[in-house]
Image (cartoon, rainbow, N blue to C red):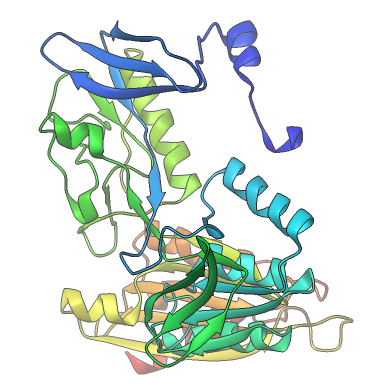
Length: 394
């Protein structure tokens, strides 16, 4: 576990002169007196701690369904290192046979793969047409097939209705179509901003209840800052506010806030929603807007999906790759992209993320001077093949 912890409280103190107090909880803010109420998690002491500058970085909480039986033992939300350790301990010691995953997002899918590889019978319920709803359904279908190939039982377009329990412990998961046996349940229904403290003192909230901040990461209260999964971001493609809970975004926002708190000048321009994951044999990546998001904004668009290889076709281990590009009809402005494929596929999403940040059109992307060698790419990289096909449509 030690290798999963980047910096300990001791390192913070010795190397950076920072008093990092773990197992302490802030329960209340007093902005008039510029102080926070603190209590020990494993103790009895409570006190008010004064501040000159306040940084709120309370993160996000897993969404817990409001259904019968949701408080039964054996139902887990995996959102912290400790919660992951708890699930691992239960799997090792109690050896559950039937696991049910509720929700087909990143955490749910990764947990489904991990548990099925431990020999459990794993079922996953998802109320949408396909898993991984951050992808368009046609791309999510490829991920669904990869899960079923390793033995995960998928129940799509089914809604959670409740949990069955015996002696306070979960026994089954009830959907609108069936009841699935369950010794262990993993909640993979996403997260919500943990903005309770900010809301209590009247700091404005925005998208999905996330804290509103400016590009310096300051709230509407002078000297009160916020960053990470608890805050609202700005989407550089849709030009609309968005809540996006990703570690890369949180890290950048925290750096910007720290520079400004320390007296420097920094700004966080926004996000394009780039994310990557590995689900079974498939690498999965996305950036920009999905088709449904483009339609919500009201733009006309074109879409093209191509299949290619991650390496030259004659080269050993040349895997399949599917690339989908979305662009504005008429102008050709790149709006988003999704990639699903075998080894060597996913990091190509960074080409598209860079193009989105630069405001490129697919007509410009066709001429990108991308590298080529048989171990890494066909002569025409799959991203460029997709761009050429979209160019024909616009």
